[in-house]
Image (tube, rainbow, N blue to C red; front, top):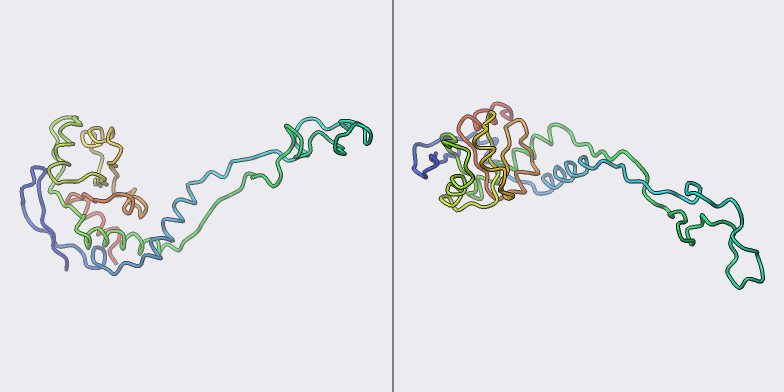
Length: 207
């Protein structure tokens, strides 16, 4: 069973925590992580892009010029893709973009993403998030103390002080446990959890 140190925001060790082996220390299969990330990114797409074909653009009611004698190419309509303001050939049309993945594999990918953080020593456990006021400067001091830049912070409940202190930093994202996902875990270098959020994750993903 993996054991991690628990710190406070002043970087003082305040205890140790045992993590579930099945969630935080399982073999990582990169192809499954790739499949989960591909699914997430594909399902974010709206699929609303659209172009007009030659039958949809305005105009084209008459032959633009006579067939012979003008010195120009033969043309039957101004909506031809060869013409200025003509239709688009094989352009995109609205479509449903949906990639499916079995629930068991989604959960497995999420466990592997969590395991990769612990195995690479990029997992930090805090006893709690203690910020006295909404202040980005104080939050940046916390990041510098632990030498972290690209950070995903997970909370078990709404924490307005933390969320507002971190929202102006582009390399930091604050998520609640319900929104934890494989893509964000892999996108950010470091993962920060507090003890209550660890408990919630283990309850949700425990076998």
